[in-house]
Image (tube, rainbow, N blue to C red):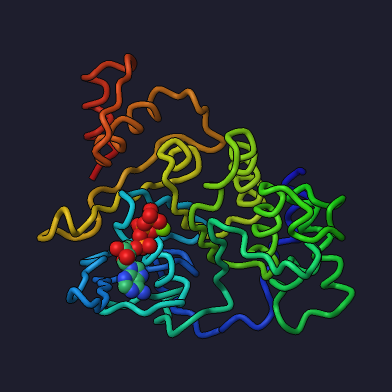
Length: 300
Ligand SMILES: Nc1ncnc2c1ncn2[C@@H]1O[C@H](COP(=O)(O)OP(=O)(O)OP(=O)(O)O)[C@@H](O)[C@H]1O
Ligand SMILES: [Mg+2]
């Protein structure tokens, strides 16, 4: 699928709010900004603080990956930005406007595809279309989206009749159906086999190249994060670091996309991130001094 063919799919949805602050995240419209975000939950064992002191800016059109140990609050963060949950403290702004609940400019896709089992894939994708779209236009849009994710042939099948990868692609198409300005992905390719996963990463980049939606992608896969993102945010677990903020490190990923998966600079960053996650990684090249250079260049 070429980027030309994908372009019309991601045109803006009708009925977007016009009251957008002209001084948004990273100087461009429709970015996302989190100021001093915290989230804690009351549990039978007492208050459980999951996120603390999170200041994050997602520039419009930027791809940002979030990595961190299990339970550190990645999904919680994504749910907050999606407006599915509210922070205990702090403000989230979308295009300069404070978020109050879910927003039509945002779409979410979760690790499990969450398709409606009694509907066909086409009907599931249509479920994501913005309100107010004509029937014919809607049908055409669904066809475009199915083609975009390589599912034209499976439009009439139901979720139980397709593979996990196909269901995952349908889920991505549904998230794209409304032409979101902000796409939130929670381990979207986690359940897929390695090859399908690599293909899905390229598919996401094709979609993004066609229309630079702001993307926040949560992943357990450090290589995936470095392949996809402009920046990688490493979160820490507050259980292990009770006196720190949630953001352990920000890694700026060098080089333009599509990236070479074998790039030495990425390999060095991979080691850094894995070490940040408490995993001892070995690599022979580049040299330790080069890693140190890259660290000082790219880590803040
Ligand atoms: N509604 C809730 N009530 C109580 N605790 C919650 C709630 N939602 C999340 N938590 C807790 O917050 C912590 C972070 O959960 P979250 O799902 O955000 O982690 P995660 O980083 O996405 O982990 P994983 O990598 O395993 O998906 C967990 O300890 C979880 O039990
Ligand atoms: Mg999670």
